[in-house]
Length: 205
Image 1 (spheres, rainbow, N blue to C red):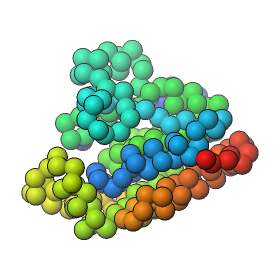
Image 2 (cartoon, one colour):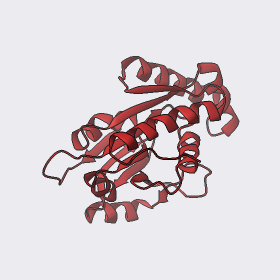
Image 3 (cartoon, rainbow, N blue to C red):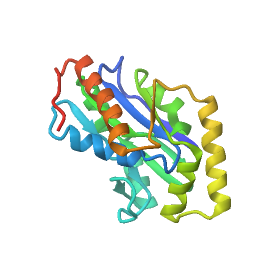
Image 4 (cartoon, rainbow, N blue to C red):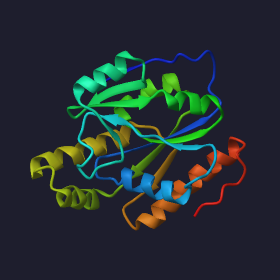
């Protein structure tokens, strides 16, 4: 895994970035979508679309699909505040995120544990919210989506366990059960961040 980032700002960024982290299959995309529906139209809140060198019709997260050539051009033009690579794909966070946080906004993004240290250098007050799932449930979800064989699934489970044991987080959400339960927990984190950032008490749908 590799990453590259830069911060063109001149000082601390007042907004709050909530970075949702977790193993593949833990349900990060579903929880972010759940939160987006809860807080639709709330001022000061941005759900970040990552640019990914992956098709936009693969049933995965809501993202900006780019070819490698398009990604290179966007990167060269300064469109990204942070880029990294993982599992053969390239990821980029749009520079609009920096402007939003500089204005005191709150943002939610699907992140990567491998790029976390680089992200903290740009956004020092970013909050890590890790989504965890018990190994049996995670294995079932990985098998259900049909992207990996058993050997690859076992490797993913091993990586997930290793990262959980060495990664410090600000909050942990168990998504082994109902999506609504874990979604409510993420919603509470978003609500508190908005309140702390001075956006009042948002009303979730």
